[in-house]
Image (cartoon, rainbow, N blue to C red; front, side):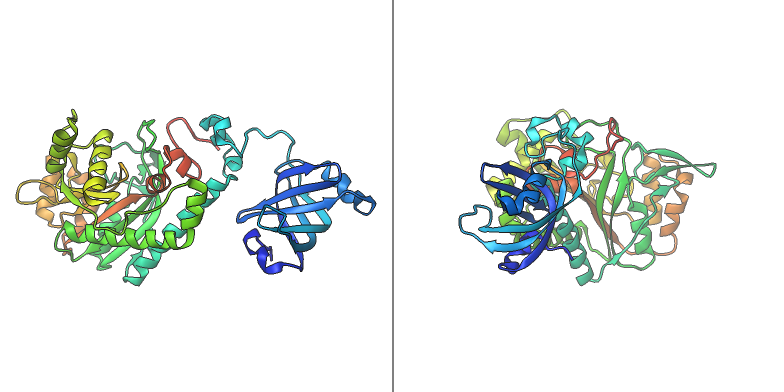
Length: 436
């Protein structure tokens, strides 16, 4: 089994075999140093220049950065070594793969190449320490969410990604031929989440891909995204749904902080805080009023939020409630899908969750009464026949329910203060990018 760099402290004064990428080489007059890197850290390999080490000395002089090697030797504690106070004195070095001497991008300085160039060589770009940490945090984030749901008796579902109908009327879909029948890639597991609740599953979740054929070139849109979806039965209102999301995120952030707080502070120079206070809840109309009266900004769009408004209302939540999160509730019916339930004033029982200036969630209580659901679909100009499979879910009894979806990459963007979703996605897909 491989020994990882973060476990080397347990092998002081022992023979070790350590494998990794060559991060740096210093070939001096009397000594050679190789810094070897794996996903958990780095270690120094020290080779004195003398007759007994001639084979190793000659080998090191031929090595190139980012080649992979296997070092066999003894690990010593050495307080003079700045890198973790330890070094390996090698007996043998095996080159397991060679890198071309000229790298197409500088992986130690992301600003040295254009983003699109780095995305062309994403496999190299991902070798940076910040990217490695980001996806470690993503792994723990999803694990912690699953842990929370399993502990609270949720069921995990896996919905189809090939669909015969769109889950969101009017939104663009990727069309495909399904054995002679028109179909599309799923934009959302929404209909199937609701089907699961009509099946008596009570509480369900899914983490999986969704596809949006939107010709959008913003810093926070992508054509293929990873969605975190939740649906809850037997709720009394949308407040129950917001309560669950707030508890879920607080649990998840506490787990991230427990394991990676110091690493995040060291690598990204940020701290994850302001998640343990109550997330404020502000109605859509009140939020518009606050933005207009407190910040003197009035958007042209009266039915939804513009990016500038998201930033301003988050500033307000931080200043007034010490919270990086804020729920915006009661959106106008014209701005929401047909399956959102309406209140007595004709507003949707829906919400968005904003985090550090960006919307990361849309959720609502769903309309589960078949007659009202059909009426609202017609009002939205939707062909009822195309939704027959969905409407059938509600003809034989369906509990009151609601749910939400979180954009995984958007959440990671905001956690780390990353300015573009391309940097928070393993392999980005957008209108102009289909490679690698």
